[in-house]
Length: 342
Image (cartoon, rainbow, N blue to C red; front, side):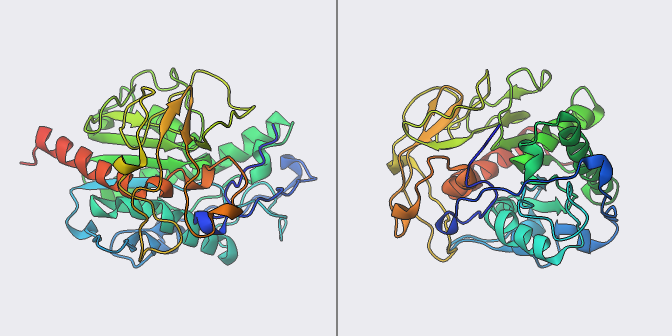
């Protein structure tokens, strides 16, 4: 499956550059694996409350309220490991690689996980993410093993979070792209029909197809304030029909927070954060669910003429930055009203 997206190149939509991902020549079994992260050490978390990081940044007029937030978000970042490996660790990224860590910090942590800092304490583990080529290789065994190794870190990080940080606080699960693959499995293994299910506030499963039957014990959200449910969308320019990703997948409109096909004009959009946090772009993006994908009219801003790819994958979150931010706050308030702390 060839997916020539802007995927994972940048999470500031200004600086998106289409890339052809590197091809890996060796099989998974012939490559050494990088050392596993130790989540007792703060350096293996891209975001932690009380530690200065890019999840603390806020747009002009907003505030980081993690210190008083009543909920947590466990955020699983997308793939940033796309280029030719510079070491022997081909299929999974080394969490000690400073260049890759900086990419995670400056892209998904800054432009995605920071959305939640008004209403949640932000926890985002570094993990041995699968290389982009895992999604393109015709070798299913290599793909499975690379993703399995990545998930093993996400699982251990979540277990560490539960045992050392959570303290029975309500939990938001949020993820993008590869992160969404791992988040779905996390929901099945830790929440569905498990005692922890009572703490699940909502899940944002963005940027990957989420089959309607993939989480049988958890329903898709059907309103802006519903809790104990999940949301998903994949963003494309209006009129574009991707040749991949066909199926019965969940898709929400991140302006109306519903799954119907009602058109939401840009005047109803709260706002996007593109490159600069000093200037959110208010009402630049409309949205409409089209089958199993989200259609938006190409936003107009300085430099937007350079965007030629109709797949807005890198903007799934930050095109609707303020909309999601407001929505998280509403759902947290709703949940806390229904489950008051004694």
